[in-house]
Image 1 (cartoon, rainbow, N blue to C red):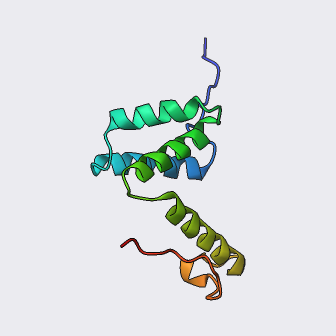
Image 2: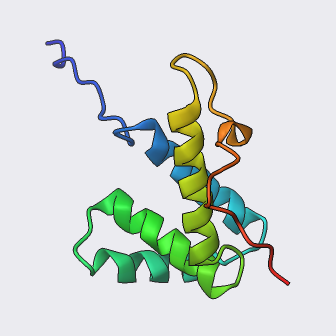
Length: 112
């Protein structure tokens, strides 16, 4: 008897999830946080009722903010500049941060 064809489910539904996973592992491997600290942060984020991968992103953002590595205002400003760059970039052209209009008021302020 031949077993039924079974294709295992992909661990990620979208490329950003795989990238987020890889980024988290790489940051932990570089010593920015321990894996036990990570699992505690993820567990806390999952208790907020977010879906799994959004909880994962929130946990990582919170962990990096708590360590002063990527503060929420900096992350928000950088995300906004990427959105500006995406809107200013013609379809089919790679999105580059320098494509953001110079008039964009979404500047990242250096820490000092």
